[in-house]
Every structure is written in structure tokens, then in C-alpha cells.
Length: 184
Image 1 (cartoon, rainbow, N blue to C red):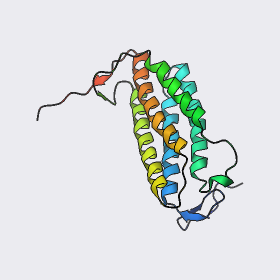
Image 2: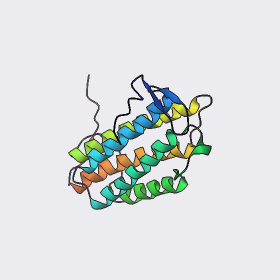
Image 3: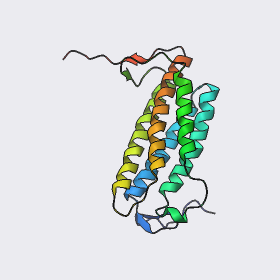
Image 4: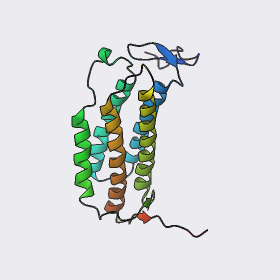
């Protein structure tokens, strides 16, 4: 099978079991942001990370394929295969709690800095928040259906990426960089 089909050359793409839409359609923007997030998590995984964190991020990357498939299917009744459910959100919460328990309590805002791995995880967090906003925008449109669990998953995933950033710094023996108000 060839990688190129030429069917998108006019600026449209097909949705799963749905119509062709413009490539700037809010649904495409939503799952495109999720795809970008998945790629950025892959970049984070290319950095030295603790094994437990790497395994959790591998699971997240697989879950993000499911999120993308859900978002690419405008009619949920035509969707076959796995869906993101409350068990996925609970897994993220449990993982957040486990890693946060090993960190010093956060008392100030911190900069997205420290180790390279921490900075990449913070960038992934930021892209995750954008993906979440795009999904919420899609959900707000008339005639568009989005699982509320997908929104919760992305919300919790951004929290996990923040905690993982701090954990990556801690594992490397690097302190979080506190934000300080600079005089003007």
C-alpha cells in the first residue's frame, strides 16, 4: 500500500465512517493536536527517564491513538474497538498520586525548566492543554459529539505530564526552578 493517496490534495480528508471535511475542520484540529501531543511524548521518551515513567508514557501513547480514533469518528455508534473510559482516567490519577507522593510539596509556581527531559515534558503538558481546548471547542459545536471521558482524560494527562516533569528533575537530582517576579 502506498503512503500517499492524493485524496487530500484538495484540502479535505475523510473521517472514520463519516463524511469528507476540510483539513482545518475543528474535528481535524482536535485529533491533530492529540497526534502532535503523542509525537512530543515520543520525544520525551527519547530522553533518559526512570523506567516506571517510560512505561506509563508508553501506555499513554497507546491510549492517545484510541483518543485520536474516537475524535476521528463523528458518530460514536459507528465506532468499533477500544474507547477511553473511566478506567483510563483512574489509571492517570493513580500514577499522578504515586509520583507526587515522592516529590516535595509544591509551594510556588515553577518554570518549565531543569533537565531537558523535564522541559520536554512541560512542553508536552502545554500541547496537551491545547489539545484539550480544541476538543472542548469541538464538543461545543452543534451536531458534534465528543465523549466527556476524553475531555477528562486529556485534563488529567496534562496534570500527569506536569508531575512527570517534576519527577524527571528529581530523578536527575535537579531542583525545580521557581518563578520569581522580576522588578520592572
